[in-house]
Length: 105
Image 1 (cartoon, rainbow, N blue to C red):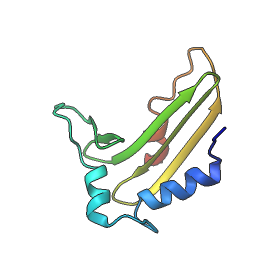
Image 2 (spheres, helix red, strand yellow; image 1 turned 60 degrees about the horizontal axis):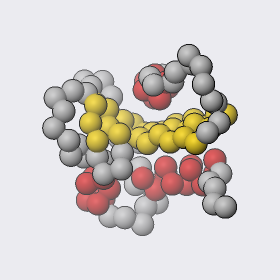
Image 3 (tube, rainbow, N blue to C red; image 1 turned 60 degrees about the vertical axis):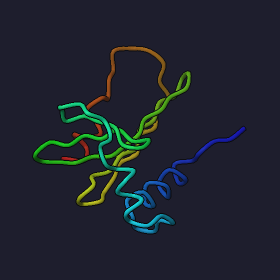
Image 4 (cartoon, rainbow, N blue to C red; image 1 turned 90 degrees about the horizontal axis):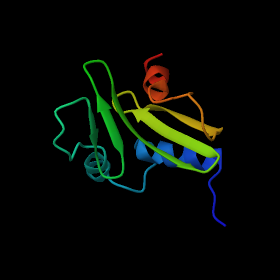
């Protein structure tokens, strides 16, 4: 069985922000550039959900399995990020905007 720890996700996030990345900056830019034609604030890069408005630009990715959800994302200009991990199945609790709100704070 393979799994990632919070430390693993933190290291991955630091690499994606370009602090200690095995990828060159131009390759990171390709990953974090919008490649979909939606005329909205939301779009998709290569493996990343992208959000950009006049105040903030976020690249992130979410995932889940039964009983668990996670999200990591970072503000592309300032290069600070958040990681959310939780045990969760069903309900009305939504954190669709939590990453953006956390990064704006």
